[in-house]
Image (cartoon, rainbow, N blue to C red):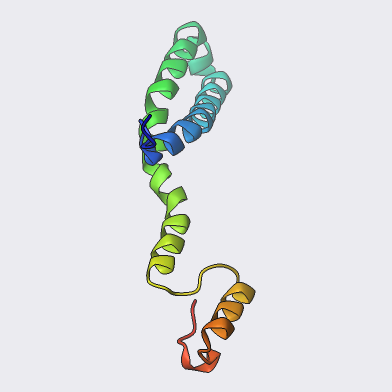
Length: 110
């Protein structure tokens, strides 16, 4: 049994975002179709078109958003690999105290 995932992390996050992106795109499309008089006259054709368009456009949007959601965790892992303090300011101070390094000698993190 392999412990490596079959699906990439970006794809997993993308799948979670997909439903939300689809709902937002559908909501925007349906509101536009139903509130504009010239479009609402053709609602029988435009509503299925909005459904299909939102299903298709949601995946590229979710794919673009996924790495941005992963970045804070990636930055923490990168700092941990470099041996730098990770976590809340209190946890960082505790780690500095344990290492014996004076806090004043470290550059301030933003």
